[in-house]
Amino acid sequence: MVVYFKREIGGLKKLTAPQKGCWIHVYGPFATEETQKLSEQLSIDIDFITDSLDIDERSRYESDEGKDLIVLKTPVENTGISDSEALVITIPIGIVRTPDYLVTISAHPNPVIEHFINSPQKVFNPEDQEMAILLLFEKNVDVFQNFLRQLNNKRYAFEKALYNSSRNEDLTNLLNIQKGLIYFVTNLRSNELLMMKIQRSNFLKIHDEDRMDYLRDIIVDNSQALEMSEMYSNILNGTMDTFASIISNNLNGVMKRLTSVTIVLMIPTLIASFYGMNVDLPYDHHPFAFVIVCSMSIILSSIMTWFFVKKKWF
Image 1: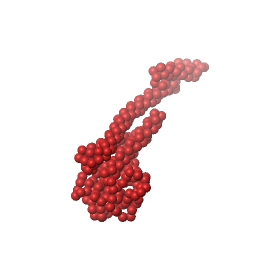
Image 2 (image 1 turned 45 degrees about the vertical axis):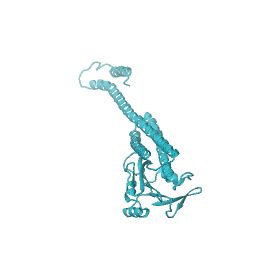
Image 3 (image 1 turned 60 degrees about the horizontal axis):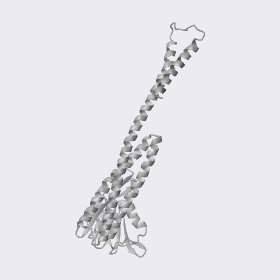
Image 4 (image 1 turned 30 degrees about the vertical axis):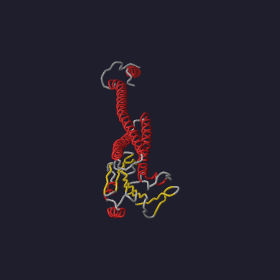
């Protein structure tokens, strides 16, 4: 599907057809014929579109016949997008700059594009392509940081649940968060390298020093998000190892208690077995034989119970 927006007083206005200086947003999925038709309509290389729709495409930039492509990775909730069980994954946003249009392409809806479509943006002007791209960069870093905070809160909640009950479900939830953080670490680093190359080569052709400073600030924020994701990932790795040890220790404790109970119950069973044999036994004809046997069982079982309690097996 393709939507068109033009900057007017008060915000963005949706158009029915492209105009010079407008913003064109394309989101999939597309059939092959639709992709070819869109490529011809916008006069851009078809690879710019197909690469941007590939969720495994890496962050990069390239130029072709006066048209520029920037592929930026952005986080989204994994609602069946990927076979991975990660709670959050990353998908590419293709940003195509042509002399007439600013085109964004994504395979699925994502918070970055939705933010600019649904919220009135006073500073977002598609005709000022340099600034519009910088704003997309900034919002993308902000979305990464928001998702990181959400993942950290979920991690904390699952950890609290594990303190009370070592359920496989809670461990699986932590594992899925860990998978999401791997996506974050990998793609934040990839985005950082992309923006540093853009800054170094001045791919956006920025000649205003304030805007160059703005790009530097975005790179710093991206680095902070990368450090956060690495820190959360390291914490989660340590947490998973710790809980694995705790679960193993708890299992050992349960086995010790069960073994102790089995030994304590074995004593009266053993005595009863002896006195169940058809042979002459001590106190066989004593009027209080039953009481004596039961008392012996209770005393010996109590001694074993005291011994195990002292050894902290109970």
